[in-house]
Amino acid sequence: MNFNFQVITQEEAEHNAYTWHYDGEYAFYDMEADQEDLEEFIDSKTRGDSIFSVKNGEELVAFFAVEKDDDTTINISLGLRPDLTGQGIGNAFLEASLRFVQTKHHPEKITLSVATFNQRAIKAYRNVGFKDRETFMQETNGSTYEFLRMEYFAEKI
View 1 (cartoon, helix red, strand yellow):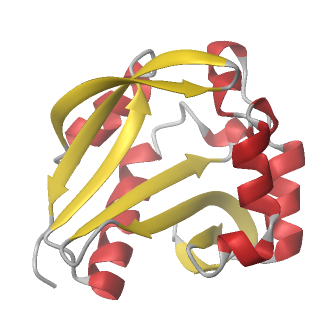
View 2 (cartoon, helix red, strand yellow; view 1 turned 180 degrees about the horizontal axis):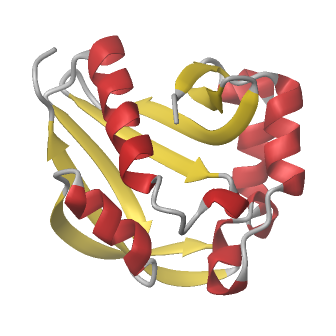
């Protein structure tokens, strides 16, 4: 699969937010599960140019968000289209995402946070070089959940 990143359009943001629904416990990641996250994702002013659609050709396969923490650290969020999860493309998507953010921003460190129940994602993050740093509790989706903060020390590109 060839991953191409471009700033997400309003149409793509709305399509993702309202039609991507994950199965079982992964429904936690549905955009509609948290009203605040949903509003930020679909509001073009709030979103700015920090969220990218990821396509394979013309097919929308994922989204990727970048937030600059400081001059040396970029925090990322990402989501693979629900019907593509569990098919073995996660590592390739992660590697392409890391190359993209390193080329565009040249950070020393890339961080992310993931719900601790999501062992499938945690395994993929570890496979590409992310290291566990700390767990913390966060209010989201109407309750409080445990998250794992992970970090990746970027290669110079």
